[in-house]
Length: 85
Image 1: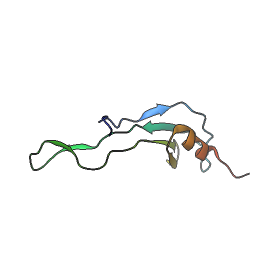
Image 2 (image 1 turned 90 degrees about the vertical axis):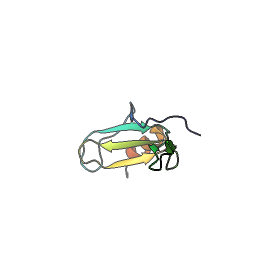
Image 3 (image 1 turned 30 degrees about the vertical axis):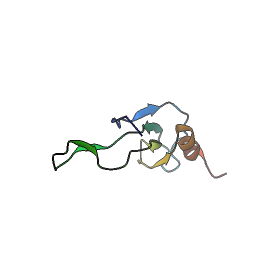
């Protein structure tokens, strides 16, 4: 079970090719595993209303906002950097 309640993105320094669609640069970040907590409307206090988030890595273009998702920075960077020969 996850004990982290923060979902703040963490930037990752990894090589990324320019966007295949617009040519702009891209950035990579991770969102760590965390819980989604909220106060109950029935007065039962703080509780998890949806499943824990397992975490993930993402690459997004600065120019056109296209992106990829993966399990790790290395995984998503490999997807982003893959080009047809």
